[in-house]
Image (cartoon, rainbow, N blue to C red; front, side, top):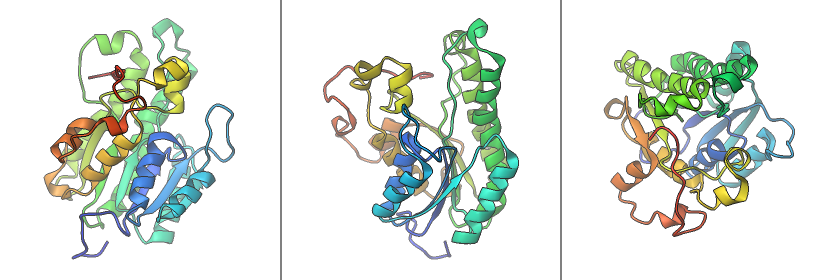
Length: 279
């Protein structure tokens, strides 16, 4: 974006979003696309999976239908060279990067004795290391942007034993993403790069929740990914030098923005919502 452009929306902004082929990442992409944003879809899925529908290519079609421009890239963020190549392609196509959304994540809600080291490594490679690596690759370009933002889909650092005891490996991996927020917000404050975290108060209706937390019955007690997308949009349109180092909760963001109808986000309005972890 050039100086003097309207920051109230995301028109012509370039968003690099990890894990944007489905779920929350795609919802954020589609909301930005409504403004006319450029979306770099950095995700692993080139072919649809029976339990996890959606690919980088189907997401690109939806983004362009919503009014944005899309660059679908098959990227495994465990590998630094793939991240670097994707960032280079994004800059070549769109001229820069304005916003990084660290959304890609791996989950295993297992205790210490039930977590194979291979799964431990996967969560830490994608969640913590992937977030760090994508931030490292994008920051040089964010430094050149007007109103640059990094937004991590990670929880507040709530250091209570109950959030570790049942799934210590997963908690460490997600908190690693949040520690990136804590450190990078201060590190890049002089560069006016906003670094924030966003987390849902309730479970969100995604394939992961359906597969991990009880199927259709649990989905009925969730909110839609749209609540995260709307909250992210609000954060990303704030002045970066005035909005950094925060651990935002989705409905608090929207309430502060004047939203009063939260039933619009419920899968089953009036139902008893499932609370998310870490809050």
